[in-house]
Image 1 (cartoon, rainbow, N blue to C red):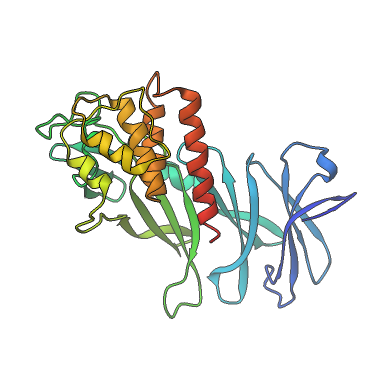
Image 2 (cartoon, rainbow, N blue to C red; image 1 turned 90 degrees about the vertical axis):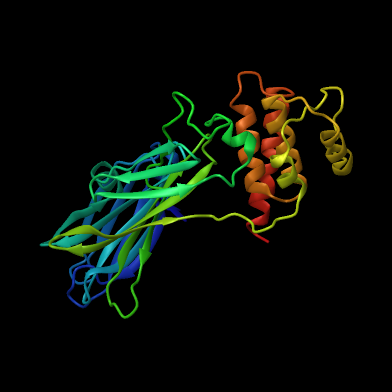
Length: 332
């Protein structure tokens, strides 16, 4: 990032976006020295004439990036801008601009895609989730019966019937917007990822990937797939045993955060059940066993209660430790 009196350069690329065979300069700019709050502009400087075009980006986002990509023609680059926004489940905003008759023209926006390609998801009896795309007349069925018993108990009765008022799952806005190069193609497609979210923002039932291609003067969905994270085959660990155990209770006077064997034994010796306590100690077990994503889901489930065990402050502290471990492992 470069900062001068004229502005702050967030990202910069060099390439032929005008189609005249001469490289042009493309920038994402912001105000210098924090003179304006989170305002960004797309700036194009023509390599041939050195004329400058400026377009304000209205999203109140961060982490702006530029990519110069052949989406429509092999002899001309389009401008792909990606940024991160604040929304439920996390979201990415993507825009594509083309240089048309000495003007910048927007030809794609993930917000428009989200509005026009609505997905719905519903819990169904027998531990199934239906994902529906009415626009494409498609239905996808996801089997979730391998999930933890205590997780499923939030949505289902013991006979596998959906509880009243618990039938709707959530769909994230655009969670990923990436380039997709088909084999042998000289132009790129777009890959849009959305999440089907269960009982917490970190609870991903599945991902929906939509592939878009430039056809008839617009980007159109040519393919849509469901991505599943899968379940372990014959996974022999303590967490799986807990999920199969009918009930258990952990006395509030006994805390074994620093003794995994003691915690396992104590859980095994008790039979009563308290949901908030269950999620807290499941998170601890998962944290010890390095199953960090599942640990984050469990502590979020604990925090969803009005009075999380053992307290909201301690539960949030555990969540911070889990999130820190996840971030640390990303760079190993």
